[in-house]
Image 1 (cartoon, rainbow, N blue to C red):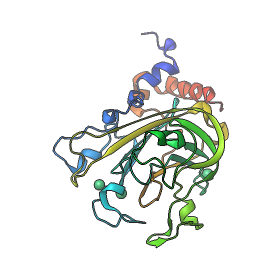
Image 2 (cartoon, protein in one colour):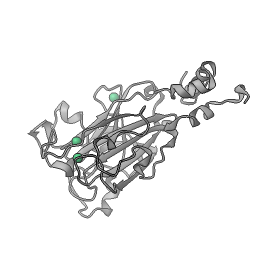
Image 3 (tube, helix red, strand yellow):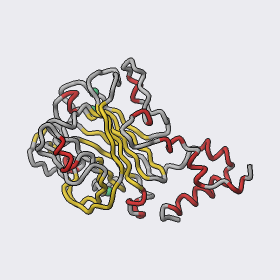
Image 4 (cartoon, rainbow, N blue to C red):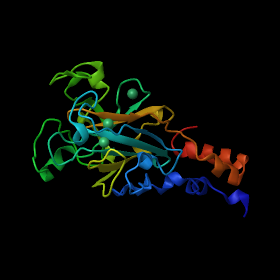
Length: 274
Ligand SMILES: [Ca+2]
Ligand SMILES: [Ca+2]
Ligand SMILES: [Ca+2]
């Protein structure tokens, strides 16, 4: 092989992160045992950042409701394609408080700049009970630069307020209330078949992609928080990866450190940096 023909594109092909397809199939992310085990939640790609908070108790923190309000796990795959996020929840999207949107806080400063619509206002036509507090704007897959978020019903854990104003409530936004539609990302969901985790219950899966081309270059070097909750924010889940997580060290070894660095520089330039 002529080493000088190796391109950044080839380097990216070597990364298992490229296996993510936004089609509602969770098997890109996890590989459940089929027996309901705690390690069902572990990502297939051990380099992915993720957070698991699978619960079955009535109290979920900050609210209540048990499995049907449980925000269970979130995974993030940051690649040159963009930011892919997967969420598992016990929340049925067709009843009661709706799914919130996937929210990104760049700089981790308490302001969530981007929202990926999971259900949106237009999605409610397909719900069994069509209108309920917590409906955001947009259509599934829309990417917004957010001006304002809907919030849940909690000013603090166990402190109910139908119109919360606390920093805690703002730190756990539900759905996009207003903002600028930047373009289309990708979104898909499904109900999980078979057991998942050791605590039982029904689970739904959602995955989405916020394309790198829709993210302002000023944010692309910053650490960010990916967050999801439902319309009441009875339970939430978040994880804080870094967008410029570098390709696998093993892939760099395959082509040699010099070319690996060149490839990384090319990759950063393609994303409007360097
Ligand atoms: Ca659970
Ligand atoms: Ca939970
Ligand atoms: Ca921010």
